[in-house]
Length: 334
Image (cartoon, one colour):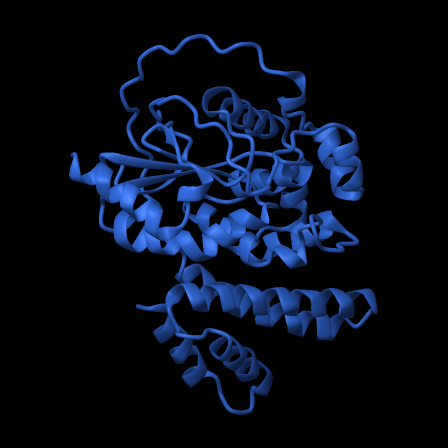
């Protein structure tokens, strides 16, 4: 059943005397624009975040009943949000290993990710300290980085993917949760790629998060450790669409950790579980390794970076017409 139909059913089954519930559902409908599943999911996530903020304010003021009422609205909307979760592809089988590449020169120290458990805790409390401490930071300007040599993409069992695992074309995106350009790509370019190439089985899309700062590590750790794989992209989309509510890069966020946990709560993750996941050292080590590989293998120095069948897509070619032409060209040769 389409998410639009679920929303309509919820409205029809809500008695007129339950004005608060009807107002909540109507606010979702009003904010959903064309009423596509993606638009409804985004609207639900936004309304949930608003109710969570109200619940927190009521709780802080000792108004427990009001806080409970706001959280009840959140619980109702979460059921609808989960119903519209996008499906990810099964973990692909390991592809053939690429030809052995020349051993890369030792990587400069300033490019090594240094996100640790302690740094995440410090970074969530005082994000300004993250950059002063020398964490990995990619230039997010529009300048074009040198393209890497043609290096085959090896899809790993732990990669998060969408699409046909046997597709002849693999599109790899390196991105970061706090990156505003990545959020725009997620909202404007990715839906077109998904509709025309991923959903039709022509392209396998692989997403790898890299840490620009400890906050990125914390968000990715929640996505990986606190949620099942089939909820990963829903959480990534939720975070991108709501960056002003939690992202300290460009927004004034007094409590970064609390804001991230509030977003995770929309997906049903408790505050305790979020705390545990954000400082999981094994997961932070994995995230660091992804960042290290991005630099050493593909010379990734800014986000987002797209790798198409092993070749870095130049920034100038990341508009829809240019990228579509590249995809069509690759597919015509298969």
